Length: 153
Image 1 (cartoon, rainbow, N blue to C red):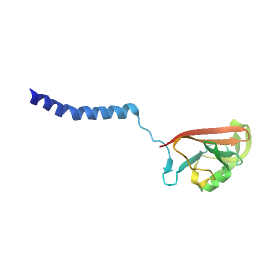
Image 2 (tube, one colour; image 1 turned 45 degrees about the horizontal axis):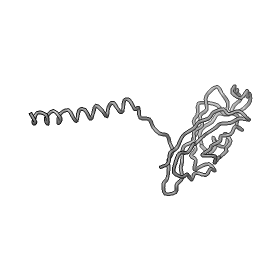
Image 3 (spheres, rainbow, N blue to C red; image 1 turned 120 degrees about the vertical axis):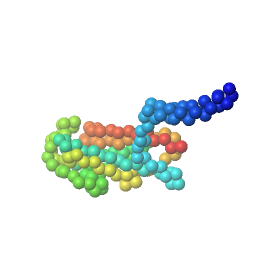
Image 4 (cartoon, rainbow, N blue to C red; image 1 turned 135 degrees about the vertical axis):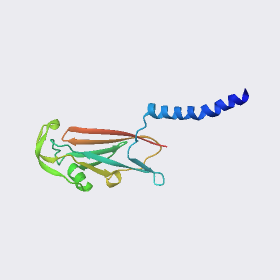
């Protein structure tokens, strides 16, 4: 009887473990955590800041990309952001309804990326929770806002 009990445990334990792992993967739904990199030796973070443009809307060239990490900010015009990223662009006349804007600006289905290290922003962070915010602003209108929580152990 003791031998049968050990045999049952030997057979069922691996199957039960695999089942628990599969359920955890299905129920928890793992997702990527983002493109934030922390260099422990220099205590600096780096992250990809992304600007997406869409066909049918223009983004005025004097719009501002504002990056904020716990109150430390960097400002860069959309024109400079696009030029520094080195990507293709389409500068034409159009409309941006969100800001009641009619005029010239950038448009098209393009994605531009810069790293925080390419911007003039303080990137030294201490242990704990931090908030990384990216805003696109035209005049007094916030056109877009993205926030990312960063935890440093």
